Amino acid sequence: MAMTTPRRRMLEDLQLRGHAPKTQECYVAAVRQLAQHDRRPPDQLSEEDLRQYFLSLLNEKKVAESTFRIHLYGIRFFYELTLKRAWPGFDLVRPRNIQKLPVVLSPREVRDLLALVENAKAQMGLRIIYACGLRLREGTQLQVADIAAPRMLGRVRQGKGGKDRCVPLAPRVLELLREYWQRQRPRPWVFPARHPSAPLAATTLQKTFKRVLRQSVLSTDASIHTLRRAYATHLLERGGAVARHPSTLRAQ
Image 1 (cartoon, rainbow, N blue to C red):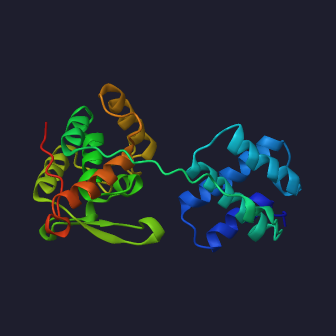
Image 2 (cartoon, one colour):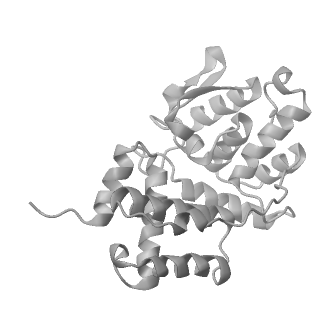
């Protein structure tokens, strides 16, 4: 029987611990980049090698705090849980905790930005992400069966933490979804890829958003996650739980 490589064993350990596929992907990538940086198998690196790698992330590459955390958590998982090798330095390593005000778009800015999206599928995908406060992959992986029109609810499968939940659908959003479905007739995915058996790739929607963002006059720091943040902000501005549907985006 072939021996399991440390990287393969790490992936198995991540699966056994119940980490989400995206987390597995990020953690394994962090260890791969560590190996590429030192040009040696990661299980052969010394404590000093690890120390210098994290210093390079901070001082040379100047990676964002979120990126640094992924490297730290992924590499720590590999050494402590997969290799069973303790390194006291992990308790020393801390990302810079820089508090920045998030980009928050106004309702009009969201409306104007989405009006620039020419592709009907991409536009509806971004609308539903904003209108329901969804994460990117929660939006792209919606299924037609998840839309409960009579109850005005949408079902999110396996959201953050592997949890299902329901989100409210405003009447105008349901109307737009019906118009979109009558034109596209998607199944089983609301937003299918070119091959209808697979959902639209998250990267496809990201590229579309970045393209229209460059065409607009808005902050280039915005991202698709900004739409989710805008949903929460607009909900609070309109009275929180009283205003359940902050988005009544109209077709342009």
